[in-house]
Image (tube, rainbow, N blue to C red; front, side, top):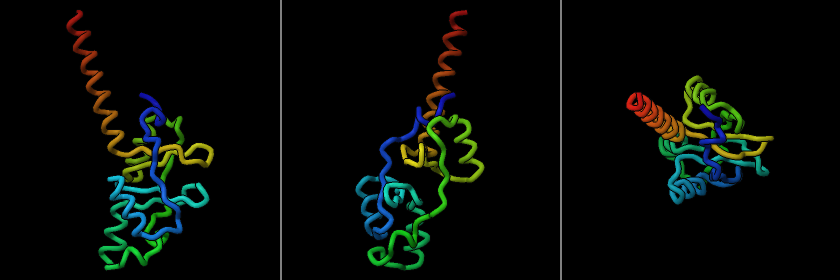
Amino acid sequence: MGQVRDIMKKNVVTIEQDKTALDAARILTEKDISFLVIVKAGKPVGVVTEKDFVKKLVAENKSPSEIPLNEIMSYKYRSVEPSTEIEDAVQKMLNHKIRRLLVIDNDKLVGAITQTDLTSFLRSKLLIDATMENLKANAD
């Protein structure tokens, strides 16, 4: 079916761990994205998602300009290597009930894969497979 490197997004937006929640919120809004990878000295240390903002800021009525990013970020994140089979990445996401995986190669962030990426890929694959079946049936 292919490897994660074939469908991952390579330009993952990151933010340094020492920034505020407001800094992160502004980047999410400006880039129209749903998560950021938090880095320290260039290496991933966690993620922050829109859900983190709702649960850890809004619901607790905290001011984003006063909250360090490391107070709302998730330190647990799941990752795969670029050579990971797509089926294995899908299984990992299902097993852990997560929406995204970081793609790490030699301790370096090289990409990310999301449910949306997988859905688009699988939809295209299904359409191609169906088209090939139709062509084969019509040729016979």
